[in-house]
Image (cartoon, rainbow, N blue to C red; front, side):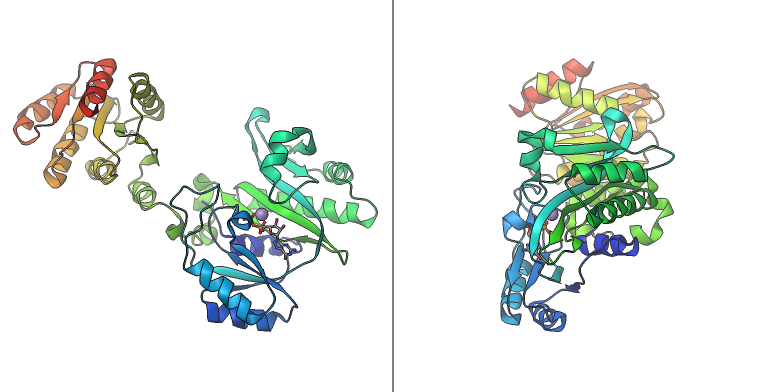
Length: 389
Ligand code: GDP
Ligand code: MN
């Protein structure tokens, strides 16, 4: 689950990380008021969205008057933000942050995330932070420093100081930067985050170390022990189909192909996507309905897939172990009654209760003229690709 910058800033501040004062607003008038009450010569107006790249997209704007603040707010609130981190459809903006502008002397990148190669969380830092960090990581990876966190002991003070020196801090900055890193590690650990990032961490011209951006992604599987954080979720930032899928306990990821896939098991779902590609088409989604799927969940899966206008055909691939083939067949028939499939559906079923499932599908033939059955996965992939060609 992603948090907004203003929510993440508050958590950083509660953990002793210096963040400039800021106000959260939802209208141009409130942005103008915030500008006045912050009493700074200049402010930044920042769109609060679950995506980065705002600076380059024009959704972080420096303003020098209440009037300019209102104008920037008006623009941001009436446009979706499209950046390299969003799809072409962008994300809606309904909340803004107004913060006193700081005069930046130097920008750093600081982040903690899971380093899969080391099977550990890692602190990642660069003295070339800011909006070009992706380029720095690509062009000069040696400028991105990494330090693995011990799984039990976490980030150690000596590691933080070592990194601070390597980032070029000297004098009193070393201690301040090291403390900040240790505090960020506490945020990461205490919130069960999958990403805790400050980009940029800045040294201001008047000599302060400040976090002027904050990003916090939380591990969904740990949210049950952070109900206060779970309450900060903002569904407006997610694709509507993703929200529906999550509510139905489906592991669903929309892709941009034409073949909708209904599969049980993540491995089988991956194999299904591979075989669709192998036969010359592209999957419209990854979907693992899971082992304990209910009839209602399975019907919702079909509804979700059918509501994607790109879907030209559906491949149902069920290997019934814990999930029962007859339940999926029933769901398919019921979804068909509800939405009337007007696109080809190819079904491959094997395993628990497959005979009952075949009977259910056979007796539904009349009402589902676009339904085909397949003998195995290759046959199924061939049939569905041929049907949409
Ligand atoms: P992001 O592009 O979504 O990561 O948004 P950021 O909050 O990181 O803002 C983008 C960039 O705007 C930062 O990297 C800074 O260079 C710049 N920026 C943000 N706030 C300030 C500020 O208060 N003063 C100045 N001079 N630049 C700022
Ligand atoms: Mn940033």
